[in-house]
View 1 (cartoon, rainbow, N blue to C red):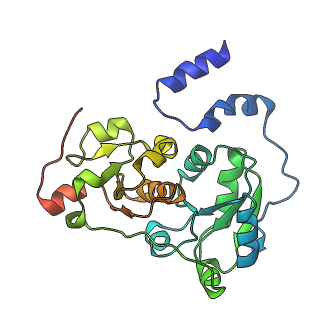
View 2 (spheres, helix red, strand yellow):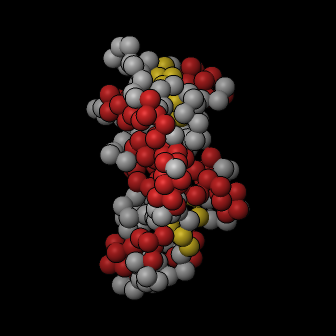
Length: 242
């Protein structure tokens, strides 16, 4: 009965991360015992590459502009903020996946650990020691994603990754809505044509761009800001389907 009620509640929310289905049982069992204060082991660029080649997922927690300027190819951009755990659980469906964290100077790795552990993601392989500077110094390949201004964007190329209700309340004319949580399953269909991702501020858009890049897209860009910023900059009206 409890599971049926939970499923009905989740269905009313639209798309939701798969880990939500595990939480009732995990809450019933109680929290796992952490034997010591968890830390992230410093990893060399060579170790990161080897672990990645064996199935580890690189998670880039830096701000949008830093990720866009240069990142490890195939990494998943999830900016460190309150919603970090939500998107980690949504886009890395298997909690057993080894995770490698790429952070920027001064970012709180303890916060990364805490947010991962609270949703049951405890396979933390480590963090890239020295960040992207160390990766580049080792001669490893670096990918970049352009950040566009509103006037550089063709609305018809825009993938708006906000929730359906947000999109209905105002969006770029001709843009299409694919919620970020559903983008992984639809990424292959968009391959071969330019794509500009956007959301309300930029964090989800950067995550979406990283999902598309992982799926083999080579013509991906990000529009920072939201629809209102685009309308203010271009003088054009938004579409509203609410």
